[in-house]
Image 1 (tube, helix red, strand yellow):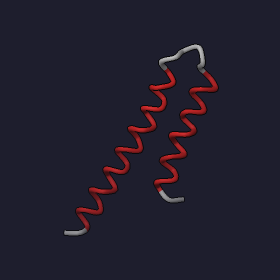
Image 2 (cartoon, one colour):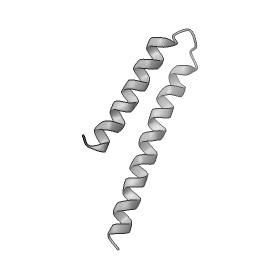
Image 3 (tube, one colour):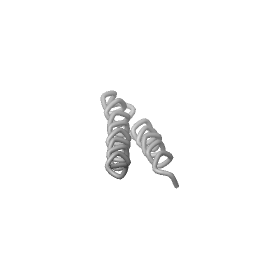
Length: 56
């Protein structure tokens, strides 16, 4: 499975878990989505740094 698909799957699963388990706690929804988004950002940043370093 490509990393991009895995990253988006992580965001979707995090969203489903947060929405399904904790509807009474409204701050958990944006925090869960934000956590998945941050994970995607840092993995993508790492991939780009690897590509840039291999290009030298």
